[in-house]
Image 1 (cartoon, rainbow, N blue to C red):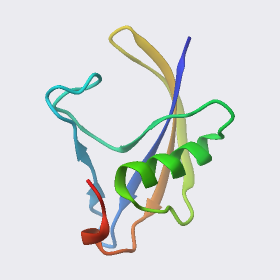
Image 2 (cartoon, rainbow, N blue to C red):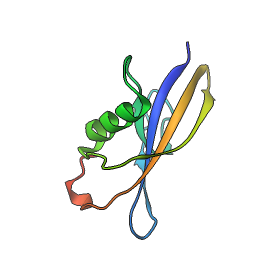
Image 3 (cartoon, helix red, strand yellow):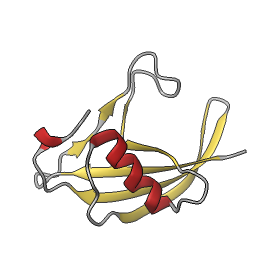
Image 4 (cartoon, rainbow, N blue to C red):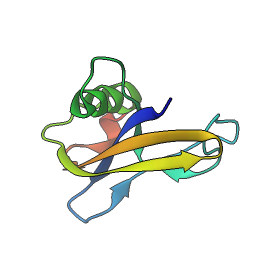
Length: 98
């Protein structure tokens, strides 16, 4: 079964990207820098999934995520399909939960 994931690329007015550093004990991509996001739940659209993940991981409500690209991926024995969205972050980074 292919995993479906949705990711958000958040950037600020200076074109800096907001990334997460995954812990060394993370189940997938330990000790890597990555965009925020995760699995799409059954019944969710990719946009619903990316909005939920951004709120769960960052306590940030996406305003207008734009679809950017989708593609298949394989990480070790895990196969999946990713949907990538992009949005300008216009808020105060101090309100984010990491």
